[in-house]
Amino acid sequence: MRRDLRTIDSPRVRGLWLFGAVALVALAGCASGPSFTSIPGSAAGGASDVYPGSGRGPSLAIAMNDAKMDAVRNAVIDMIGAQAEAANSATLDRELYNTRNPNAFVFNETMQTVRRENLGTIDQMDMVFDITIRVNRPAIEGVLAANGIGSGVAASGERRTAEGLVGGSLADTGSPARGGAADAIAAQPDDWAEATPEEQRFIRRYIDTMTYLVYFNQESPESPFLMRSAVNQANSYLISNGMIAVDAGQVESITRDLQLVYEEETGREVSILQWVAQRLGADVYVELDAVTSGETQAGTHFGSANVTMRMFETSTGQLLGTVNRRSQRTASRSSQEDAVLNALQSTVFQAMPLVVEQSRIQMALSASRGVRYQVVIQNSSDSRTMSEFRRRLRSRTSDIVTVSQTADQTQYDVFFFGRADELEDLIYDVSATVPGMENLYHVLTRGKSMTFNTGW
Image (spheres, rainbow, N blue to C red):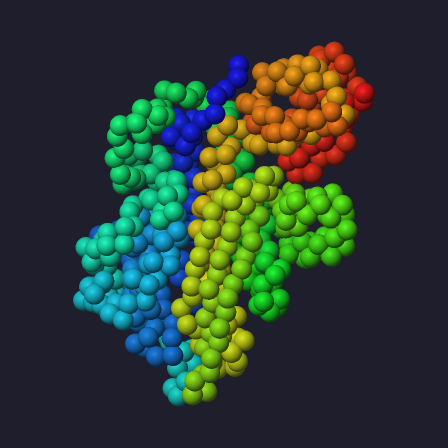
């Protein structure tokens, strides 16, 4: 039977949200990386409002203050969700994280020192300071409220976080109450069919085995060496957490050797990064951009980085999310380039948990009605035959949508709970039952895009 489009509040995906939330927390907990990086996490030691923080700077005071604000940032993520925190990063940086009085947002008497180490010299200090500390939740909530930043709701009106989507089992979304006409059109759980156990298993397997491609914006004015280092740091995070990543060398090789093929096939209608991701079978591709700066004071070199990472679904180029992160100022005794490199790598590593979380959430939303495949049928001049083929294929898949149709070719978006080769087999089975399409043959498969010819 044909299934209707599901929504994010559908019962079919609620179990998936809980699974994804638990898995992501586990990923964040086991993440490893550069010693100067703090990974946003939940409350430490189970104590109320106690969070870890990590800081680094040319003096103990600077490193300590950075550690306090890192703990505050972890608390904000815990309070409003990673998506909302990322969406409001500019406001939070301006109104909270860059405060000159970090003690207004923590209780100093609760601070426990985990690590205090000078990686420099007595004359040129490079302090690393790791702590746990109780944050001043009412003070933080006051800043959030004053700037209209709500729990689980992004500034741009983005969808709720995974924790909110599982109902009351993990967290309240804090979304404002709706009424009147909005209530009348709001989807209800009973509107959507339950996912079968096999469909739920497929979605979990699919989300857990996605392939990620990370590469930098090739129009960036930053040094290619720095940007490649940032890409390598992102891939290091993915691989160390058991995810599949495409090697940056493959991206560069295809971009260099197949530039003319890209232009002939696409007419530049899609970005070359999306086209490369399709060729390499990536489910998600991430475009990394950065702005860096450096300076030298009293023989000590400092660097900072502002990183933006945009995630896309490969088949359609749909935007899955954007993560912005600004580094703390890092110091180096050797050179400005080394200080900037440290700042860039640490910021990318800090952003990656959010990149993965947002990608998984949005891809799960898309997969709730089946994986989207692009199916192109060449030589489709008989519209009645194509209509019959579409009708029969729809009865064997989750859904099928006609994107475009001409006598030369017809393009469908097919939503299917299965792999590409399974869909190919299904298309052969269906075409064999449609008079006039018995000679359908396969032309090309690239990622989730398949091309067939009717043989007419």
